[in-house]
Length: 76
Image 1 (cartoon, helix red, strand yellow):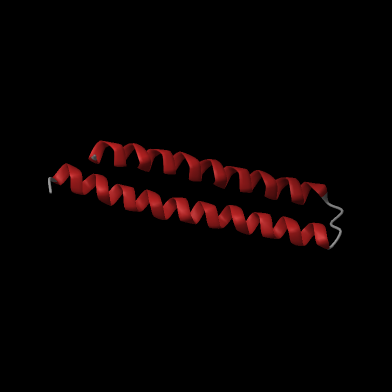
Image 2 (image 1 turned 180 degrees about the horizontal axis):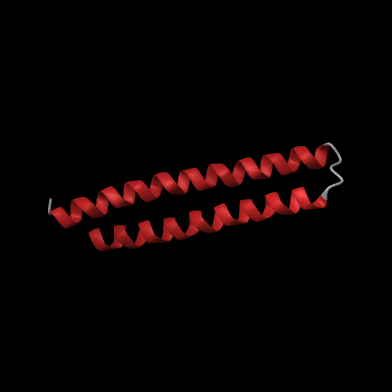
């Protein structure tokens, strides 16, 4: 295995870990939104803030996943 290939594989693993972390954060935000809504949260700002955070993590997850997919294509 070439050094460049090894570096790509290591970076792909890091990206995959980051994707999992962002997905978990987005899921936790959705869980908190459900909890707030089930308790009749009157503060829409809290729910909207959590929605924004969940969207951020989802977008980051998609970006990193796309980057890792591009690296996989390079290795083929």
